[in-house]
Amino acid sequence: MVSKYVFVTGGVLSGLGKGVTAASIALLIKSMGYSVTAIKIDPYVNVDAGTMNPYMHGEVFVTEDGGETDLDIGHYERFLDVNLSKDNNITTGKIYSIVIEKERRGDFLGQTVQIIPHVTDEIKNQIELVARKYGSDVTVVEIGGTVGDIEGLPFLEAARQLRLERGPENVLFTHVVLVPRLSTSGELKTKPAQHSMQELRRIGIQPDVLVARSSTPLTDEARRKLSLFGNLPATHIFSNPDVEVIYEVPLKLHAQGLTKVLAERLRLDYVEPDLSLWARYVNKFVNSERRVRIAMVGKYTRLTDSYLSIVEALKHAGTSFGVRPELVWVEATEVEKGTLNVEDIAGSVEGAVILPGFGERGVEGKINAIRVFREAEIPVFGICFGLQLMVVEFARNVLGLSNAHTTEVDPETPHPVVDLLSSQRGTIVKGGTMRLGSIEVKLVPGTLAWRIYGGVGVVSERHRHRYQINPAYLKAFEENDFVVSGFSPEGFPEVMELKNRKFYLGVQYHPEFKSRPLRPSPIFTAFINALLDSRRS
Ligand code: GLN
Image 1: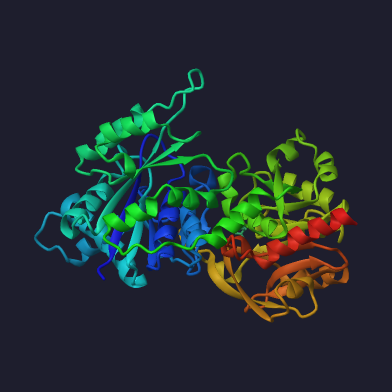
Image 2: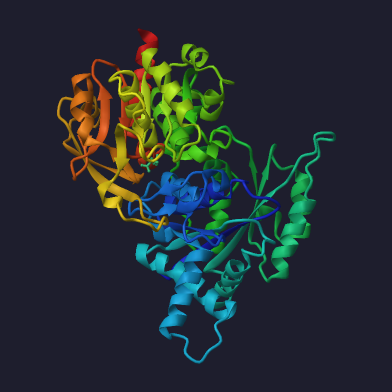
């Protein structure tokens, strides 16, 4: 079967949940028994997401092969329950660097290298490479940004060309729009969506399917207008109102007949998808009555998408126990300024997650918060920078090593308990040079970490860091019951835990990236379990 493509574009504004729509479409096609992969196109000039502040586009999602990708890749992995690669995230930066490299090599000798056809050809080429690599029947391609953005134009043009070359039965266009509701009249307004579809038609793309995001379900009147002005049948317009949990979206779209429309338009044999496991998960989530309050200590807390995979992993683990995590965001910079009282928070939560991060801002606030939570003896779970700062806090306040620090923040510290990885010495280039991707961790038998993973000796988890815990201080830590329960292949600490505590544990890696709704991460599951236990006791 020739590979077919579903493009997903967005109109009116960004942040509409286009990624969830794309992931849902991919899931519905997969559930009919077809092989599916998904690509995220980000029209920015960065080669990858690794060098961007999470405030720009949310978290950086790390793939098995060490790609630093857009967070939508995380949605695709969680919905499709597959591991994707860095190739599944295409950016303007990536395309241009390939085209420029080819030009320098002389591949286009004699020609004027132009956006059309050279850049658009490379876009199609990269999309097709991914389809071929996965041998997918259908490849869902989400084009980031909003229709009308200058940056997005070459990608939309490439999509238009692909439809012309492959035919409408092999290339389908889905457009996701916002249909705002006026609070005064309660009316759903379709005008911005109409303009966005007009803009798409102006560049030669007529959407086959429209997904309307709104706070309440689409009314018949709104659907009629969208159909008339959007130039597509009302049966191809799908309502995607706000939901409690994103995993409900494929169920809602399927119930309105989207799977049938996709099969029909792509000339795929329709097979009734079995979404029962999915439906059971959503039911369990929605009906989870118990709540656990978790303090989330970080410095990007004003945009919670900065920690998307961690939030999702907590929900996955919570749902497996029928509990819903209630997150209490602790902004480290406010703790530092004294405008947020951690003691009060410690008294009202069941546990705390010390979030990953980089750099100096808010660090002293995080260290203060860790001390309070450690002394309150509630479960504490540190991830990457979170573990590193748990180590700094312990060194200062338990081992009495004043001014102990990570050299990332204080290169002159007398006690560098966290220091640059030896493999990073001499690394100057910042893009894509951290210790990245899936690497093995050797667990120490008998430890909590070892029990959490079911007593297996070696596990594989994803990484993204430049610094490590300094082995020179391990003896002092271990003598004070803060022990290493997992080592890297090179022999530096990957997991540390405080003995005789239910859960005071930190990991150098990011277990959140491998958590799936129906297969939660063991370590997140153990953390939630510890929270439930501590409440019972
Ligand atoms: N900044 C730390 C390092 O580079 C931690 C990184 C992280 O939390 N992902 O090692």
